[in-house]
Image (cartoon, rainbow, N blue to C red):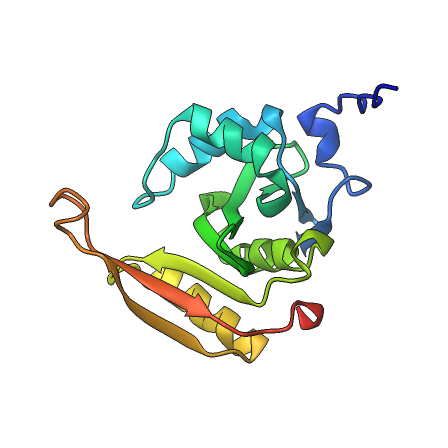
Length: 192
């Protein structure tokens, strides 16, 4: 017996509130948070390119994240279906209670709305992550926006935040700032 294939839903239709996991922002400019799909790959790629100093990966990498890791990633769209926010990450195989957040991007149109935090919390509150009690990421020492986000998350979740150097400049080829491993937890995802 074969498994039925779910019907295809165009990206613009996915922006509707009936499909979104969460609706945030102001009533006149709502933003819709949902799991990504293959139609979002190129839009995520373009968003990351517009958000320096983020490292830009290939469009193929973003297609893989949007399809193979969709349960642990999130996009935010405006009413027209334009991607204005993205978070990628995965649950670690060797530590299934830990979510590793790879990238957070918020486009210029959605900055100052608290969207980055809401994207992370939308992912962390999914049933697929019910057993996750730690969040890890890497941050360069001078990325004040990311440090601020993760300090706010730790405060909201009432969880400790620890960091240490993880990758040195030398390990990163001498042309990249060092990356600190940041760990928040333990926390209770039921309270997020």
